[in-house]
Image 1 (spheres, rainbow, N blue to C red):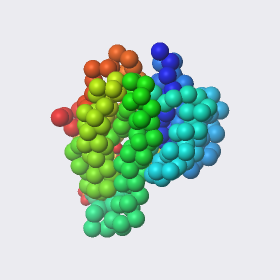
Image 2 (cartoon, rainbow, N blue to C red; image 1 turned 60 degrees about the horizontal axis):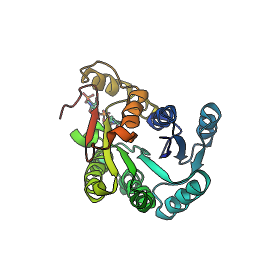
Image 3 (cartoon, rainbow, N blue to C red; image 1 turned 60 degrees about the vertical axis):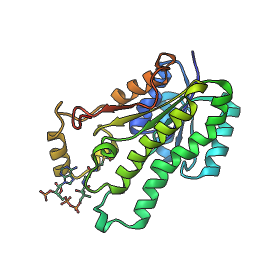
Image 4 (tube, rainbow, N blue to C red; image 1 turned 120 degrees about the horizontal axis):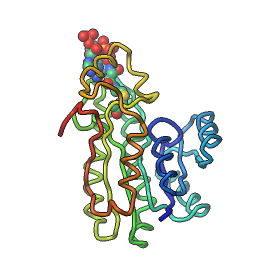
Length: 240
Ligand code: CAA
């Protein structure tokens, strides 16, 4: 059944691939983006999917943004909290700004966005909430105390929301991607990235589309018995 799906940070990388697989599944997909106008315009031009700009770390902006999308396209039944940034650095060198911005964009955003859709989902008796965490939120990663804390936080958040809403037809799940072939991973110093790939049993980076396909499954009607789960798509880098 076609539904309205909202993907945060959906114009590039894993988010764009998720938007693509949800569209292929027949959904009306709307994405958000933070600042890269050129990437957003290119995304909409090539896919036909609308992109709306707001800061998902801003509670009021999320309420307004979701309300405007619901007026234009209908109630949001599928929410993918994908937006994320990195500000890598060893903890002893990390500024409080780099801590705050990552927690705000990668974790507080999930609260803000979910808060904006949850009452409607509860009233309608259907919802699919999917958080994009990371292998590094599960295993930790040097240089990522901020990012790993936020990505781990998404798992506790999801399990709580899953319990609160299970009787309302709403599922909440996490996908924890490993190192995936995106601009974010391309920014890792080359020598470090070589070491990381050497730690991945399948011997390669993940493809964004592989993550998108898993999201499309969790968003489907058939996935109604899957809730509070974390799906690890990391090429075997960390088995849990
Ligand atoms: N795996 C293995 N070794 C790593 C590593 C990693 N992920 N990150 C750093 N190292 C190693 C370096 O190769 C280096 O080793 P040597 O001393 O043997 O040369 C050592 O740790 C120290 O690293 P640097 O010399 O680079 O030290 P620095 O203080 O200049 O920078 C750092 C430290 C910020 C951690 C930097 O190395 C870095 O950016 N590393 C990558 C961190 C990372 O993996 N980020 C993930 C980004 S992608 C993402 O976040 C998506 C996702 O969800 C997976």
